[in-house]
Length: 376
Image 1: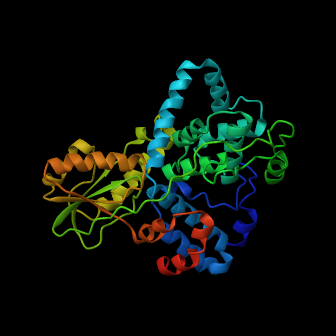
Image 2 (image 1 turned 90 degrees about the vertical axis):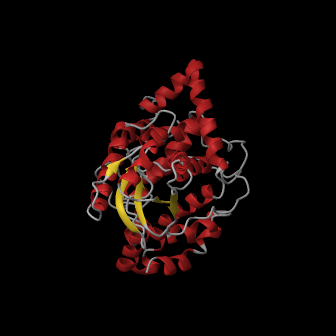
Image 3 (image 1 turned 120 degrees about the vertical axis):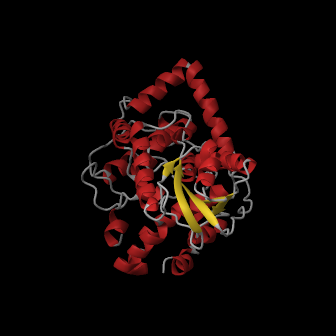
């Protein structure tokens, strides 16, 4: 988390050889561990200056989540685009063949093909490889960026609506309009320590995509206050370490919709990780209540809460994405049954998300104050 990370985080020596990245992202994505815990550990080990780069990268995730939370229409637009691009795959043979070569790792570009295969076999890619991969997908292979984002969502153990969507937009040059990320053969050769050298195979002069930039930010929706009385705790894949302080929790359950990640659902490896994370979380929460924890559906929530003697359900806030969409449906079903669903937001998110109104560099100026306030 200190000097080694700052100096080596952009170098990818390959599977089994990485030592300067944490590989904690799948656990942080599901909040089996939290941003607060990770930043506190970095500060304790290296101090604010020594861990500065690592801490900034942790805050990048919070920034992306806040950016999308203030602009939920971007996710709705993305999902519509994803459906349209998948429909094209069914009707356009040329696009379908090029897409299949890319996702199967048979393009003939050795580095790209290796990353495609590593992603499908492990559910993870080094951050720098993700940038190179996205850039080659968009500017060399000329494939729709949305289909690349969908490929990542389908396979990544740490798949996240905000980080994935907005990072692909950033590479394409539409998140920060006119500023794109071009993969260069020299950079790949240097930072893979000579494992790959795609000289002559990449388009290193492509212009950014000409698509609309982000809309203006809105305001953060209000969270709920902790209710009095007996409550049932509902966990979901966006926050599996949550416990509502000040509430009398009498039952714990979990809900998730892995098929909602992408138009193609979720790959078995990623689904298995999420299921394992949920089982772990329910096991921990179940030791704190009298009723056995259950995996639930939106239709079964009201009956579950009533059977436990709870008049209300509490759940951690789900940021914009497929889980939030499922919870909105669940909330309507519970409300019709006379069981309110209350959504709580962690102090970390409450402090970070409203600051994601412009670019990251403006947000970055607030990181020292946020760190001091949130990571004690």
